[in-house]
Length: 138
Image 1: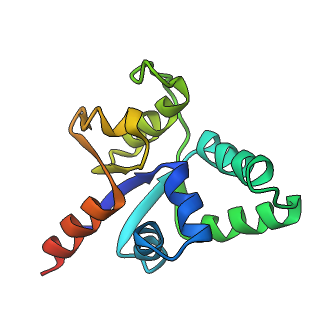
Image 2: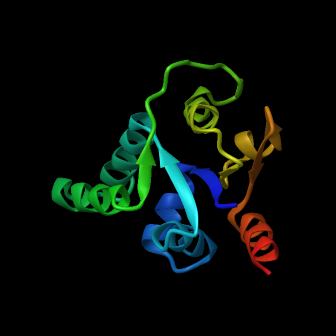
């Protein structure tokens, strides 16, 4: 079974700038070993962070999003949720995960991680996901 995942913005950002566990997760998607789903809201948040926090030029941000589009599947969100009370921006990841019937949300955000699970979707760090993935592969 190919795992279906939604990846939080902080994982994408870490994968772009640092060669660590988040990059390994992204590479699994790039290699077709997992299916990574995204939404317009998630892509907009990634673009916003890259422009404001990391001061990347518009064309660099567009190139990064274009690269992501080669191995992620976009999902149209049909239902807005209020699940994460402390940070409503995090609801977009749960909405996307429900829409695509994801197995996991991979995040480094404490608001999401504190939930641990939502409607059968496990919310875990990239290091935990990699353990699950490689255990399943063996």
